[in-house]
Image (cartoon, rainbow, N blue to C red; front, side, top):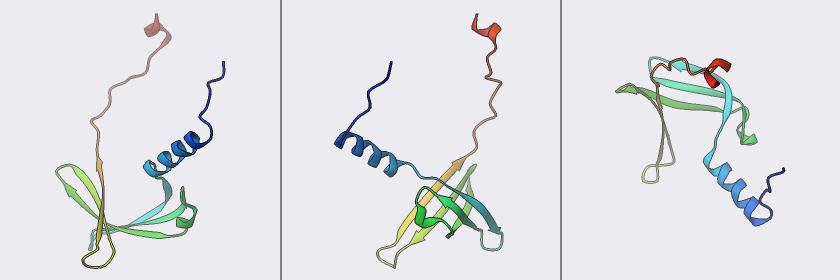
Length: 102
């Protein structure tokens, strides 16, 4: 049985929402310990215009969180964006076997 997909405006709205709430890129990075700056060298991105760009972000450790901070704009209209990474506790083995499913 095929599940019906949204069409028309509803489909466009779902795509726009997904694009507004998801971001992805990949590439390499360098860390300058003297300035605590991580520079990401974007090899490819969900936003094609970002391919080949370099992004510098200040990195800090606060209470077990790795925080990347980017500042842009001019004084008075500056925008500050932060990404917060948190290490999850070590996971236990969650694999199931055929025996477990009986």
